[in-house]
Length: 106
Length: 167
Image (cartoon, each protein chain N blue to C red):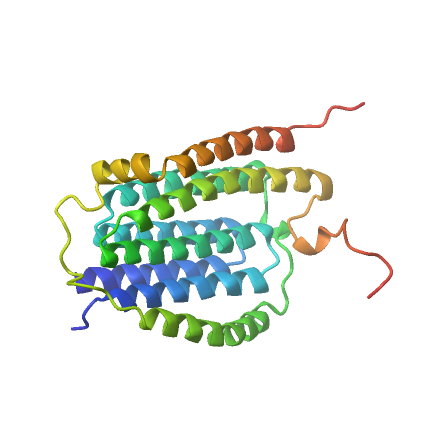
């Protein structure tokens, strides 16, 4: 049987973070990009909690809780931005959100 | 404990993979719920009992519910989903690009050494009393700053998402 140690948690967190980055790079659906961002935040939280457990200090769990609070605030603003963008463009494709793009070049 | 860790880790990876693979947005959100709940179980394994509850209540209960609510509120159909002809190619390329970064991260964490016996913790480690003591003794300023941030986010969401009245 494998011994569950600190490194197994770190390995899992690194894999989840990589899946999040792959999702952000490869998808065009704005909701899936948002969920990939949340996935990255969650994997960082897992690292913080594991460090807190193995160093025997509560600071990691406090920071993880603050990350959760910021993620909740970010979720509210992100989703309201999506709602107003969808009213404007009637699309959830990120390629349609190009109002700030410089025209003419490229 | 090993079996529980393996099952939860596989569930988390399965949910994360299904989140970025499905083309239906609602299916992706349900896959993300699986990941969030598996991570909550991992927090419980790491003695973080209060964070276990917070993860379930805040993530699975509030954030994902809000996300699903917005998806259904906007009435996103399968036909609205953007066409992604070279999705799998992009996934493969970005997975290859990310590997050196992962290796660096793994090496950095591998060099950490823990003083003393890491397998022993006190009985109330990670419960709500210890977390509250720590939060209100040493982290009071960040705590107040976050309450302000939540208020700003609340007002910002109302301002951004309301209907613009015609001038």
